[in-house]
Image 1 (tube, rainbow, N blue to C red):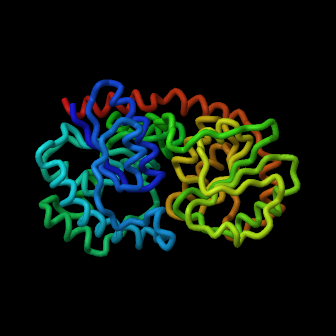
Image 2: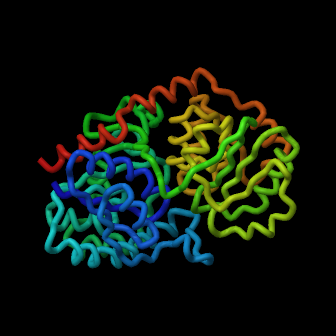
Image 3: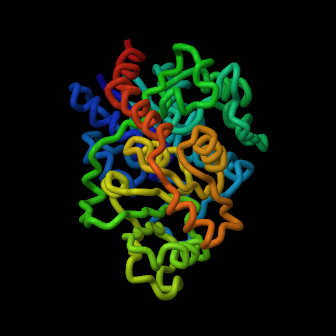
Length: 371
């Protein structure tokens, strides 16, 4: 079977799909993955054939690139991206159509190719999904460009298409973490995170000190003020403090770094979380699920997009605490880190994440879609 994957070209979108890719390859399927040159090496390490396309979206190789912080800016950008990518992937797959298309972007070129050509498609939700009884409060505003593009493709109106794309799929979180999880029917497959070895991230040496890991993800992380707050909050503790700042920050501009603090552009996050005692995080869903998989207490400092909603759920379920990104002080951050514990709620959620099915369950859904 030939299976084609597509996602937004970002760490938080590509990485969560790699476990599925590896599992499907292990089962003997041929897997293609539409992506940019930045992510081609890692999808190939997972066993897929990279189908590289040109993209408009911010790339970590461009120090001046930035994501819009609001959905009003993101959706029009995604429509322009879709118009650019769609003809590229149609041409790339013209002589070798997949049996099923797996995508985490309902407006992406790959998903639209599947819709236009009648190829079975599987929607992947790396974040909260919406259903009949609960809908994510984030708006997906269309400035008219989405409706015009879908009309050109013969796929109907924008609202109807988005509603169809939301009707089921693979959800990369356990049902217990999903808002109103027990109201979603059998079309929604809550498999949890599909983790796999990420050799492209390298290894990580550990020591015996308590470990605090700090990361604001890969999109909204240019926060030198916050990292200095971390220095002030944690710099005199007998802890190892590891801070991942991403690709855009001028590290030298942070000033003196305390002796117990390490500042890196990126780290092998799964290996660090495996040993971490607390995770200070933006609360992106991928990072949240990885922390819960390892049972790491969370101090959430949400920045933008869906992160405030994720952080609120973390607090509601007793899995961690939330601090305001705009007003957090060193004293508040220090107190939150020192108070972090593996609570009964966190232990129970760790079990739920690990028993949700992961890549094996996701692969079965994908195989069934092509039959």
